[in-house]
Image (cartoon, rainbow, N blue to C red; front, side):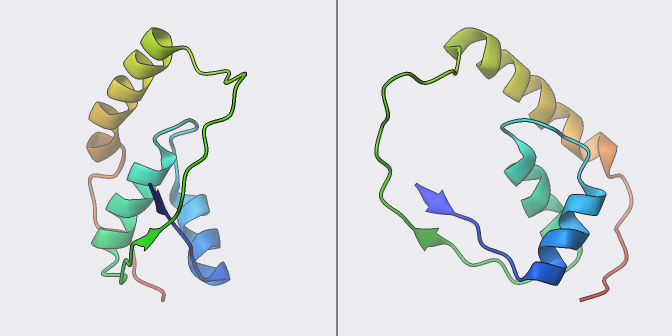
Length: 83
């Protein structure tokens, strides 16, 4: 499992540009960060499973697939780099 951490000003900028509202928002953030030439560093974390998850494997997987396919079309142009 990897954690994404941002400086405050970058987090605000990515959130302003974000169009996906769901589990795949982080993939959208990574695409935007790459297009803005931001440095991305992976930070390993330990994941602990919690009973009572609200995720529906089939429904949510299909939504994630749809969102993943939509992301490039939602951001066809390179955003301004204000970092």
